[in-house]
Amino acid sequence: MSNQTTLTEFLLLGFSDVRELQILHFVVFLMIYLVGLMGNLLIISAIALDHHLHTPMYFFLVNLSILDLGSISVTIPKSMVNSLMNTKIYSMAIKDRGNQMSIMELILL
Image 1 (spheres, rainbow, N blue to C red):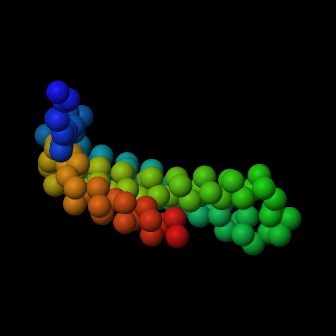
Image 2 (tube, rainbow, N blue to C red):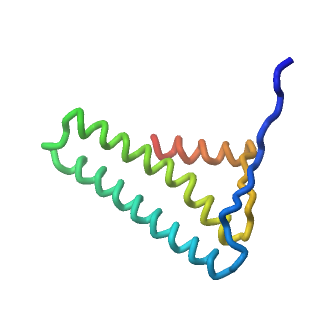
């Protein structure tokens, strides 16, 4: 007999109940997201535009930047929405995972 337990959501206890701190959390994560987004896009564009950087090492660096774009574009916006919506439950439902996978596939293509 195997364990058939499935996890569909988990509870984040780090969010505050104070509205000002929730907005601060949103702004801080927005800044982190934008810095990560700009940094990765800068790496990708610099390597794509400079033909001297078309070597295997920079090819893998571009791939890492693309993967990082995908991972931060899935996790950080969800955290920001949870902060603004005053919810502490992070859903891992099938529809959410499907949306996350669609975003990752779109970014990786």
